[in-house]
Length: 115
Length: 115
Image (cartoon, rainbow over all chains, first blue to last red):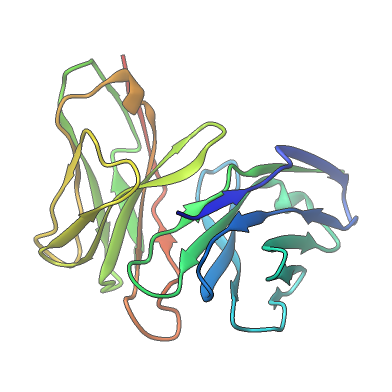
């Protein structure tokens, strides 16, 4: 079975700073997908970024980028030039490449951006 | 497009009562699923469906039933509510194939309290 671990329950940074959220996972699969989801106070789950394990290049989406280390089973999220609207819970998630689209989530990191 | 809709947004039940959480999507997604979110545990998969008439169990299926008679709807039934089922419930949907096939769209959630 796959497991996803987020070791930082809470983080807090000042607006405009850069922050990195950590995620590690355990799997015996060779090909899979990794995701970061954002959950603001509205409770809506929003996909931030997606990485395919067979791609060497780290995914980027505007101010959001990942550092994917396959051998270390590490998948961190970097938020550059943080904004007040980035305040949210962030969840790391794993999905096998083949078969049903079952997401396995980490425990989440509560990120607060201070003005 | 309304996306993924869930009703009700909030519900309070007494132990032993039954109820159905509704989920509908208008994106013609083949894949639909139900997750529950508990504090400190992230989201966990309850049941999922890969198409009308096809359902399967996820990680935490006990106490819940599902059926999928149409592509659009995927209701979740609590047969005899227990306090351990107090949680926030999310429905999600995605395409089964194509460029964005594993991008799951989430509904706004239902907060359920069982007394």
